[in-house]
Image (cartoon, rainbow, N blue to C red):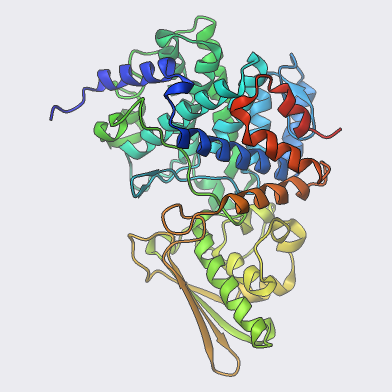
Amino acid sequence: MTAPVPSEVTAAILAAVTRTRFEDLPAATVRHAKQRITDIVGCVIGGADTAGSPELRSLLVARGGRPCATVLPSGERLPTAPAAFANAIAARGNDFGVLIPYIGTTPVWSHISESTVPAALAVAESTGASGRELITALVLGDDLAARLTAGATYVPGAGWDSPGLVNKFGVAAIAGRLLGLDELRLRDAFGIVLHQLGGTFQAIDAGAHTFKLAQGLAARDGIEAAELAAHGWTGSADPFFGPNGYIDMYCDGVDLDVVADGLGAVFHGDATFKPYPACRFTHSAIDCALEISARLREAGAGARQIGRIHLDVAPMHVDSPLDQPFAPGRNPQGHAIFSLRYAAASALLRGRAALADYTEEAVGDPAVAALADRVSITGGRPMATPEAATLTVGLRDGTSLTASRDTATGNPLSSPLSAARIEAKFRANWCFTGMLEPARADDALELLGRLDEVDDLAELTAILVRP
């Protein structure tokens, strides 16, 4: 078999993004895209008041500009890119959105939808696109971001945060498609994106608001790149695989077969629907803690009987940001959602892992802090199963309880979330901020479920904003 030629792969990407029709999409691809949109719309609404979102919204509203797209659910109208920026920040606000596509049985470690869905909604609204056009653009952008992530070999230890890299290309594909760019102008848009790339895991280390900034900047910058290209800006001949291009500058290499295989016919997108509002790599620990918490309640025991807590995880999580002492700083929620110690302690104490358990008030509960201080962490689970966790809780009477998971709830291969549970998650997000009437969630779910039949997205926007 002849190896793919980089320039030909780039040409195939451009052709796929500009020529693929809605009718070319498999029914399952459309169904999954609507589920991703539903999940992220819920997360935007649930994250609208999370620390950092109101401040950004206030800044963007003060700047003003031509009202083209809507900030959800507060209803402000802003230019397209700033509206997408605000909504993407809210989407990542509780770290609750769908993530991690799978190519076959191989996970693609990425956060794509929290950038691409808000961007697609904003550009579709501003251009008057139909639901079918929105879904087509989103599928193509998500697929490109997934392929670029799966095919790239990232520099070990470099600290790049992928939403600040591949998501911008995905968003540029979405915006370019909805703006009607031809292949040459779309290539220009990708070349402009090349000069906008960035993003670092340092924010996760610090538990700072900026952990979600790359997510929002990807939505904003990808749209602006497409708009610049539409207005005549030019870009490089091969922003992906050329000299000093994306792969050359940010990666150790690329498997072009992974990028090219099935391009334009097979479409990849985020497939791991999160059950808990926290970093995915805390979810198996939460699953284990919830099991043990239930067993404690059945036995008539409680947190006061707990003496020690030991968590065994995959070795890459030891001495990582997830393995820091539990010491909430200036952004308590941002610290808690990336803390294995908090995840285990909170779920053990409360018997749940809900949005309310990651508020500043909940994170500051001294009872949770006391339990979190008792959590020791080792890296004895296999490197090949980064989701795996084993939790052992030692009781003061000398007995112990153990729970173990190889994968967490929501893994699409082993324990996918049901459609009913995805809807329940949407309702929880819908009600969390109190901005929207709970009864209207049914109308929103019904409309999102038939988004491919909607000709005017103003119908959707009207449901998603507070009266």
